[in-house]
Image (tube, rainbow, N blue to C red; front, side, top):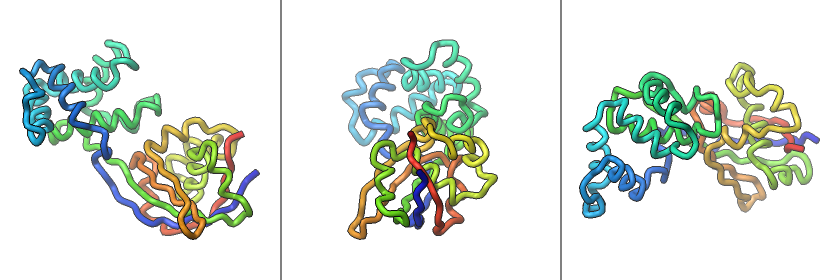
Length: 227
């Protein structure tokens, strides 16, 4: 059953880095993969810069292969990684790769490679936004309890233009009973109620999906949970 809500956009910004993804430990792992001598001896302030510098000691395609292998070694085979190490030089894999569940990690790969080879790889863009959700239907907020990504993407689509990517590609899922792709559209999601019993959602996702939200201050829309 559909529920009605009022949505207010609190904040919206374009970001080029995923908060917290590339950690000191991951930079050290990459340095070891690149046979850097005793990376653990590096001063903490130097670890990231040394990792980027070590990547640039390789050709861009070879550097891409190193990072792709580190991130996707347990998900993609060698042939796929070899192909992607060429494609990533031109294509926005965080938007274009067929498997949506890998988009967030592709963004992280692009983020690192762009930082090392500025101008060589496509510039990755994501969005970070916060919205307040007020129920217009009694107990409406309960639909966000079990699998909040599906009703939230449906709700946000109601505030986007009809020709937005989400509305064009997922029109059947927006109206249907199952929307498993929603969890991969919303890369990071935090939801909590505030003192006014409004649901506040903090989202990080691809610029590809939600770029039009920056033009929307607020709207009313319906949504429903997955069956």
